[in-house]
Image (cartoon, rainbow, N blue to C red; front, top):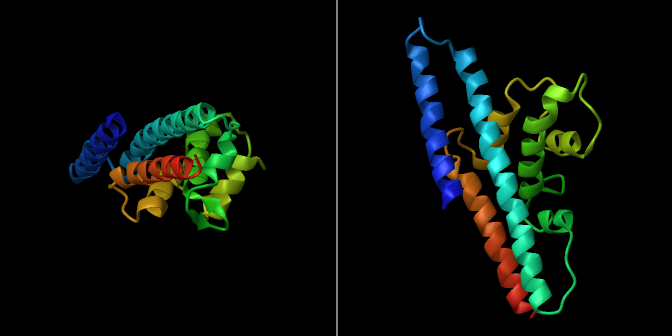
Length: 166
């Protein structure tokens, strides 16, 4: 629920930023999109926190059934693959990591984050990678609630799988 509220609020904030571009004295389109990147980033970090919580929940369920814990990365791979074998959850995680760490990079590094981004066509030359990532995930640049649905569907699928294997 809180994640959906954040996504809806962010959608509204981005729409408002874009509407300001109609007032040329206040904000141009590029500046609005630059500001929107921070909002997209906040959503992806919140999504990443949700995903970590899902991992904890799944491992609690497994522990109560006497089963071993499963690694975060293993669970991230258990969502539908969207591109080149990289799952949507791995992509969301990479977008959050990009937002948190890209300012530290003097050059585009070769790491798991950038590999996942590249699988989806995002590179160092992508002008607005977080907006682009949202569009790739949802098909709509302002419907961030669809990112929440991806995470929720993944969570429910993992829980169902745990109960079937109990």
